[in-house]
Length: 405
Image (cartoon, rainbow, N blue to C red):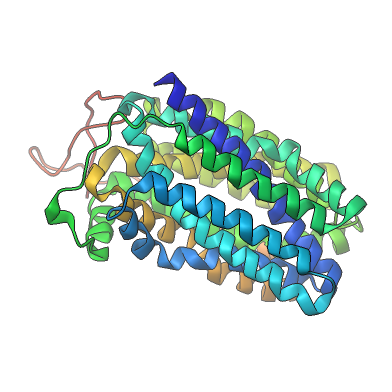
């Protein structure tokens, strides 16, 4: 299984390389074309809007061969990126939004597909570790990808970045083709047609799944809510060029690299809920750190956020993989993606509007929301009666008490 683990990490490395570079460049490109920080932040809305269709797209993964679908999606993304060669001025800015939307649809299918493919390629005891390594690879490339993307954009423009980014999904598709899915479990006929409500029921029934997913949803939504605020803090508050966002993204990638190396061990030792709550608190601390009127403090806060966000996401994804039957993984993973990334479609425009009050108030509001969510999870809970609904099973295969209420 070492071969599959290496291939999944390589996929995450390449995906993070192309995705993080283009995510930053799209925002900067629109900012340069329109001069509006709000419109630049709205590019992220196009990326996250398709997550609202996650349950339906995830159901598709339960009805068709998962690997061929994921390969096809990556090849389609490569073609979409090449369409950015037609952008020449403000009149073609809509193309950047369109490609961001295509990226969003691809992300939903690929993320749900990867979540479903991992248990088919790896033993349960390795899921948390490999999820952590994937996070380190994908987020760790922020050490170089945003800086390289912003630097290449400043030097040669967005067209060159788009062409290079289009090569990445082609390579990713080849890596998916090399996987050995020795643990594939076919869906029984009773699971067809895939019903959206089945995925939602499986997600909400078990506390071990719904709580980590909820914590990730709050943290990710607040990251979108503060996008425009970060632009404002950098450009207006600190008086720095927009390309400094690449420095902050690189710092966040460094934190994520460290976070992914230890999160698997933390999940095995403390559980998905505890790790998710800790990540949410760290994200809140990073938001408050970005309020400092001192650029080194903003960089340090980005490192903290880089640790917190991956912890919440890895905890949620591992919980979904561990407690969901193979035949339903597409639906549950798609529904979980919608729960985690769907709220950001509302948070981004709200954040763009809230920045009218300045860059720091939205950051403070985001910190308060995350701290409230973490406190609601870790507050003392009434112990269930003997023989109650506690269950067992973690990704390592060992038993332990786990409440699903």
